[in-house]
Amino acid sequence: MKHSAILQTITDRVGINYSRYKNLNPACRQVAGLTIAVTKLEELALNKNPIETEAAHAKRVAAAASKVKSMTEQTQQQITETVTEAKSELQEIIASKSRLIPTEDAAEIRLALRELNSKQRKKVLFDATNNGDAVILAALDQSNYLTTGIADDLKVRFLDQYRGSQAPAEFEELKALEGMVEAVPVAITTAFKASEDAFDPSCIKQLQLDENKAAEAQKTFDESVTA
Image (spheres, rainbow, N blue to C red):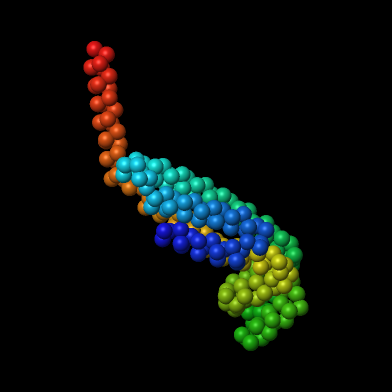
């Protein structure tokens, strides 16, 4: 039951952290659905019908594993589409509320920032962020270190703080979405591994050979009786 245990941990974590967000709730439910499917697959693999042969049991488990694999592929595609659409929607709303549109003075602002020393630059950015000065921050948004003397990580920090202040709910959900994006691949990989582990290729291959032999024997018998 190792795969279902991993998936349950992921399901619990994404449920606690992300299910409250409208755009992420469907993905949380889909991960939970994978967890249930893998749990049932592992239970099926472990509980053989006493009147069933090993070959028949392996065939039944393989069929179930194939369904789990297909479900995982569909879930992966659906979550990717959901996350992509949600990210685009959130970024659009944040951009609209933040109003970071460069003005005709943007180049001059960047030049002025570059001519300041490090302490002065930080003071300008601190004040612009706290005062909601979209003009200065828009000029910064379209810049790089060579044009302003401001390191990229510092620029991102101030811009994120500003965007978070202008669109707090959307910005929080966008950050949650980024966390969800990190968790989902682990769940998908685990579900695929579960379907692979439940499928015993050597056993299925032998089963197919035995079935072919049985079919051939039946055909030979039928022909002999008919003759």
